[in-house]
Length: 97
Image 1 (tube, helix red, strand yellow):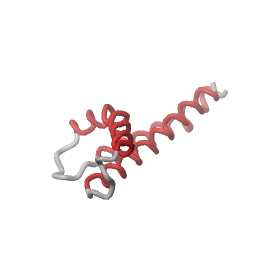
Image 2 (cartoon, one colour):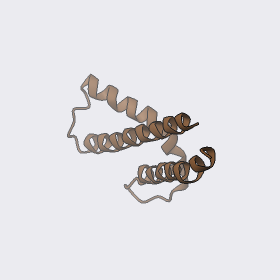
Image 3 (cartoon, rainbow, N blue to C red):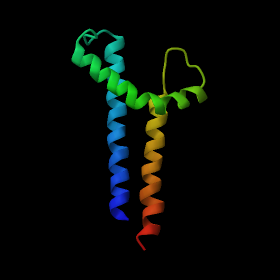
Image 4 (cartoon, rainbow, N blue to C red):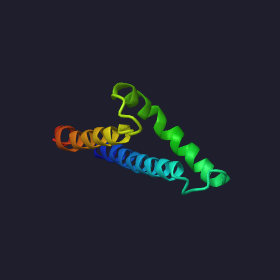
């Protein structure tokens, strides 16, 4: 059971870093810091968008419109943090008895 919890924790940690990379990439793209016509950069952007957008879209529907500010990645990071803490402080002790 511990191996399963560690694998879930690793997946959540990896998704956290992908979410952070996606947010940074979107900022760089919005301010024209990166060359969007570069094929490699475009593939990275498409990958990050395809991996994060299905999870962020429902959160954006629930959040109020804040103008040009998108806080859905922050909300998702808080949800992931909560799930990881719940897993290690509540679920793991019950399963490891």
